[in-house]
Length: 179
Picture 1 (cartoon, rainbow, N blue to C red):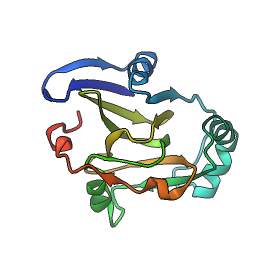
Picture 2: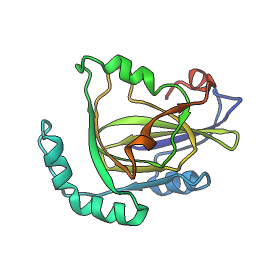
Picture 3: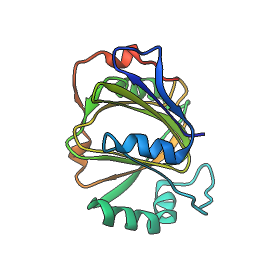
C-alpha cells in the first residue's frame, strides 16, 4: 500500500504526517510541487516481460503523460535481488541528490521509497505498483528499494543527461532510514 510519512528534517523519530490515502498523499506532496497519482491500469504483463513489451503495453498512458509534461521519451528500469550489481546500484542512489530535469517514474511492479528533502521537511513516499511520482527539477531526494530491491518502473524524460545525479554532500539520508 502506498504511504507517505513526513518529518521535520531535524527530527527523524517523530512523524508529523502519515497516510496511506492516495488523495491525502497527493495533496501533501503537492505542497512541495511533487506530483503523485495512482494509475488503475488494465495492463497485465508476465513477470519476465521484456522492456519493449512493457513500453508497448503502457504506450497509451505514456503518450498522454509525455504530452502533459513535455517529455520526449521513456524507458524501463528493472532491478531484482539477484542482479549482480543490486547492492552497488542501491548504494548509489541512497545519497541525497538532484537532477537537472524532472524525475518521473511509474511503478509497473514492485516498490521503492522516494524520499524528498524540501522546505525543512523530509517526505518519505513509499511507491508501489500503480504509483506515478513526478519529482520536479532541483528537488533534493534519494531513492531506496531496500536491501533486496525488486521493482520495474517506467522512467520518463526529455534528455537522458538530465538523469545524472548531482550529489549534495549532505548525509541526511543516513539519518532517515526508510520506514
